[in-house]
Structures are given as structure tokens and as C-alpha cells.
Amino acid sequence: MTRLVVVGSINMDLVTVAQRFPASGETLLGERFLSVHGGKGGNQAVAAARLGADVHMVGAVGDDGFAHALCDALVAEGVHSQHITRIRDCSSGTATITVAGGENQIIVVPGANARLSAAHVNQARPEIASADAILMQMEIPLETIEATLRIAQQERVPVILNPAPAQRLPSDWLKLARYVTPNQHELAVLLGADPSEDFRDLMRQAPCPVVLTRGAEGAWFREEEEPQLQRGFHVEAIDSTGAGDTFNAALAVFLHEGLSIAVRKACAAAALSVTRMGARGGMPHPAEVEALLARQRNE
Ligand code: RIB
Image 1: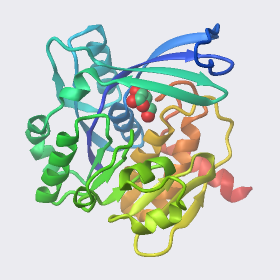
Image 2: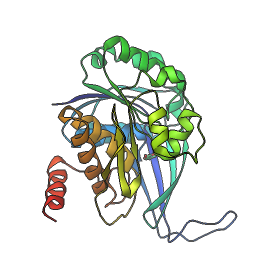
Image 3: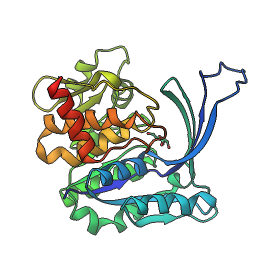
């Protein structure tokens, strides 16, 4: 069983479904509202646990009404929660999400996620030391990201860094990651490059291996060799929220099978994730991933 530590955000997602996105200054009547558990860290932890990994979550929640529900939801999925810290006098992270035509727009208020510190990560050192990989995103403070990269280096544990939301990072931090997993826009921001530059050139310039997600097209990956494309799987998209999180979790879970197999399974898992509402609604179990792969082989 793959052992993972996820260092990242935990949010309550406040989701409004509408026919279309409103224009600036416009008020629209929506179709439906739901509050669901999210946050890139929490989502990746749940997706990895559903795919069969043993997962420890390092994160923070506030002392508001959302905190209990957010922790309980992770525990219900089998995620170990002893390194989830309760921050006093602080709200839990929230994401206000609009979904229209299968696409989304998101505003995140970090709340307690902004108080996840290097000391909190250090408390999880025993779990980190015995993990196969660390999965981390960027809805937590930059100092915590750097500290996690350095702790992982000391413990010789590979880090998969999902640089979302994107910020520029120093090249010596990126060299500490085993893989970075941006989309095209995030890769340009991460490297401080011109966003109109060809993403394959940016992949070649990156100081560490890149697995680049391209939505329905699939994912490009590169270690030593030239960038290669793994085509996406055709599904009917209901809600794309959490697709990137499912992709990253699957990549980490299946990496021991080799990079190209892991990317293929990650594309399949991400495709399945968009077929239901909510960030975690469509996150698949291994049998569903295998079924989609088999269906594609037979088509
Ligand atoms: O990646 C999707 C997630 O981004 C949502 O669940 C939301 O909480 C934001 O963090």
C-alpha cells in the first residue's frame, strides 16, 4: 500500500450552480446551492485514500462551525487526522465556487490554512520519514512550502508539488521537488516566464521534471526525454472542480508503476472525477479507473 503525507489546505466549498457566469456588476438567479468539503490538500488526501493509499493529512482548520465537519469528512474517508491542527480565533478556509457548463470560478479565503506553519509540518516528521511520497499544493504559506521541501530532502522522501494557485518559486526550491504538476498558466507563473511561450519549451527549461495538465486534452510529462502526451479520456463533464486534485493524488498513488502508467491512470481518474458534482463527488475507486482504462482499450 502506498503511504502518503499530504501537506495542504482544507476548505469548505460554497458552491452555486448557474446557467452561466455573471458579468461584472450583474446579478443572476442561480439553479442550486450546496456546501461540500474541499481544499486542494483535503481533496488530494481523499482522492488518494479512495484509490487505496494510506494517507496522513497535515493541515489546519479554524474554531468555527465548519471545523468539525471538515475533519470528520476526512476521517470518514480513512485519512489519518492527528496532524490536523485547530487554530483558535480563526475561521476555517472557504472557497466560494460558481459552476456553469461544467467549468468553475473559485475565490479562496485561506483562514486557518494561512496559519499552517513549518512547526506543524515538523511534528509530522515520523510519518514523513516513513512515507513513499509527500503531496503538496500552494494554498498554504510559502515558508511552510519551503520547510516541507527541506524536511523531505532530509528524510529522502520525494515531493510532488502541485503549484496551485500559482506563484513564482525560487529555482532552488523547485529542484527539491521530484515532480511539479502545473497547468500551462501555472508553469509560466512558477518560472516567471512569458505565458505566451510554448509550454513544451517551458517544460524543458524547468529545473525539475514536469507533469503538465491540459484539461480534456490530457497531460504532458517529461523526465529526461522530450515531452510526451497522454491523451485525456472522453467523459461528460458536470463539474471540473477537484479534477486537478484527483490527477495529483492518482499520480502519487500509482507512481511506483512507472511515470507513464501513473500519468495514464491519473488522466483516467481525473476524467471520472468531473462526472459528478462537488470536488470530491466523482473521485473514483481503483475498480472504476480500471474499468475506464479497459473501455478505452476496447474502443
Ligand atoms: O481544487 C479544487 C479546490 O480548490 C476546491 O475544493 C477549493 O476548496 C479550492 O481550494
